[in-house]
Image (cartoon, rainbow, N blue to C red; front, top):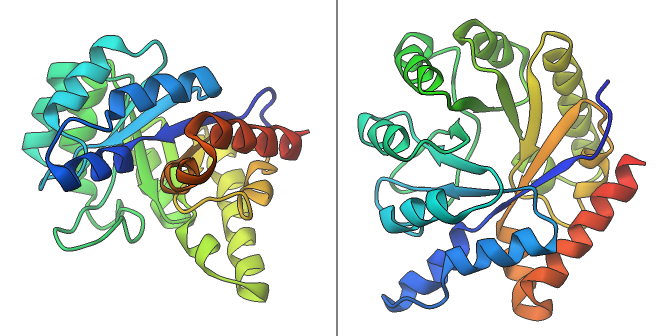
Length: 244
């Protein structure tokens, strides 16, 4: 089992969503990243999508230049995104599925089904010194595929867990627990994220094999009511208490 503090990565995509609704420069996601770090974020996550619906190329460039904590660049496995990642060299790249019409990432990447295609991206990023993470459903086959590609990190998709209730949620939690243990015992650094809130983070944060959670949409939403720093401090508190 792992020891020490569970890291919190804050996703700032939806600060950019609000900015882009007006096509102006405010609110600035880079400023939000600075506030997140001040409030206790251990890293910043940003997803540059093909359609540039929120984070922009300039955001990635500035974040790579100014951040004092690791930048986790979420990206589809495309040549365009690979070129951007290799130019800016973030600390980590998380390969995620991406559909043009989806509102948000709808599930994990099919690493097993796309193994041969993904190998090129994993190799190029790894050779550049970028840590590669595979965003996958809590499924043994997908974790085995990530291992065979040489990716050092797997991030488990928690969206299904967050959306379910009652017995169905408990069953999904057990899948995440089992997958975390399976991946950790085989040498993967295990992360988790997607859809986590104050109500759902505690049981996930308590899983000892997990080393990092990535949370964004909920925190940006709470910031409307309580401020970004206050919202992150509360999430950090819940994570720390669950870990203890």
